[in-house]
Each structure stands twice: as structure tokens, then as C-alpha cells.
Image 1 (cartoon, helix red, strand yellow):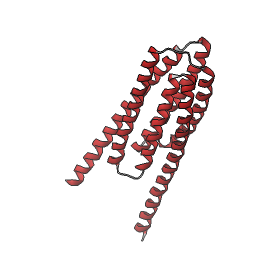
Image 2 (spheres, rainbow, N blue to C red):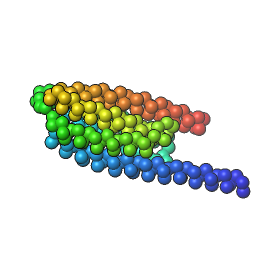
Image 3 (cartoon, rainbow, N blue to C red):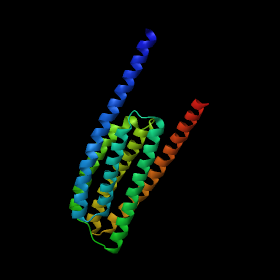
Image 4 (cartoon, helix red, strand yellow):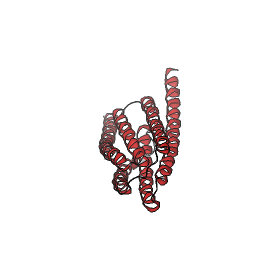
Length: 215
């Protein structure tokens, strides 16, 4: 009887943990979808490359959180494979930013710092909320850890875009916007590399466990 109750307690604990994870992921998914819509409009109205990179990052994160939500409670191998896909999404966002930077270099324009500043402020606030929600899950489970990695990038991106708006106003020029967009590009590439490394590590562990069980 004692063993049976103990097993029930563990099952309930796992289910409660997964329910908390799903709830957090639903909230951050909704926040990122809303901020993507706001920032994509602001980016085109303000002619800002850094805002556009932030918008694409939020879109990628919304997809990442949706994938994370889908595999809550799945096997370690499944989570690792999804994490690999998340790394690919971050890499795609980096390539999109690189394309935008190249286009802006050939079509220079000074962004409207008022629109940049307002959008950057709202985006930063939303990103800080997401980071706070995901903070307890930053280590351990590769699924939630990769989601936290995306959220940490968002906060850095939020501060960077806000700084870009201030520098555009200060210098009345477009180069700060491009400089921040380039810095974000480097950050995305490094983040994708970290997610790929962690995912491959989890896949190797899962494969070793399967082989041990088969043996």
C-alpha cells in the first residue's frame, strides 16, 4: 500500500509540473505573438532594421514556445529533436536579419526614432515578463531550457533596440540601427550554436539509454 501511494504521489507531482510548464508556455506564446504583430508594424513604419530583427525573433520564439508546448511530457529524445528544430528557427531568424541588413546598406534611410523607441520600450517590458516566467526552468529539461534561451535573447534584443532608438535620435543617422541589428545577428548565431550543442548532447544521452535498455 505504501509503495502504491508513493507511486501515485510521483505521478501527481509530474502531472502538476507539466501543467505548470504548459501554463507558462501558453502565456509566453501569447505575449510573443502579440509583440511580433506590434513590432512588425512598427518596423515598417519606422524603417528600422533592428526593430525588424526583433520582430522576426519574436515570431521565431512564438513558434519555439508552441513546439515546447507540444512536447511537454514527451521523451528526452523527442524533446532534443524539437530543440534541434528550435535552433534551426533561431538560425533562420539570423539569416533573415542578415538579408535585411544587406538590403538596408544598399537602400540607406534614417529610421524614425519615436516609433522605434515606443515599440522597443513595449517589447522590452514584454520580454522581461517572459524571462521572469521562464526563469525557474532555465536548467535541466532541454525543452524548457531552450525556451529560456530564446527569452534571454529577447531581453538582450529589447535593450539593444531601445539603445538603437536613442542613438538614432542622438546622431540623427541610420548607422546605429544597422550596428545594433548586426550585433543582434551575432547574438542569434551564437544562441543557435548553444541550442544545437545542447540538443546533440541530449540526443547522444537518449541514444545511450536506449542502447543500454536494449542490451
